[in-house]
Amino acid sequence: MELYKSEKFNPEELALLGRAIGTVAQGTIVVGRDGRAISRYGKRALVVGIVSTGSTIMDVRLIPLIALRDFAKKKGYPLAYVYYYGGVRVEISGIEVDEVNAILNNRTFVEAPPNDIGATVYYPNALDDMLHEIFKHYEFKVEGKVLVDCMNTPAVLLFPRLSDRFGFEVELMNDMMTSYLPPKPKEVFLQKLGKGNYDFGLRFRPDGVVEVYKDDEVKEFNSLWKFLDYLREL
Image (spheres, rainbow, N blue to C red):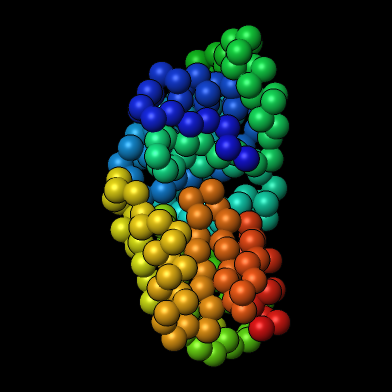
């Protein structure tokens, strides 16, 4: 769920937000980001706030949100994800937005003593590990050509690994994950999908949801596992 949005980069606000997240979580938190430099700096500010409460960070760095959600669930930890889409945004899962906002508004942060400041553990292979688990579980093949709109998110990192594994051809659009330009709008994707020789279309939204367009129907999935369960039945 989206916790924060700001058109301007404000590291002080993000650090305070991190303090509120760490106060509520009081444990290990998985943190990731998208491909923009501003998200990397924003994640750093958020992490400074979180560790000040004594909470520990598992930093998975650059990863698609849809994959991070599955990874954090498997680990049993809450997550915080920093990304850029019309401004700096923070998405959280596994902790309540209302609780974080209550702590933030009242400034009732936990402050760990210097010896108890939280540690940061780096886990740069989270996406590889997630895909390894998926590839062990699924053996099916999908035939055909697929139009994939990455919406300038790290979802581009899923390809060609997903398409090679499951046997479909892909054409990517909006695949510049470091760009601050807005992606081409949904109408361009739909027009291209309708005119082209595609069997179905995928649209990976910045909020970690994939939309599947097939036979005049649209399905939405916020998990790679649920998405692949659907593909297996095609």
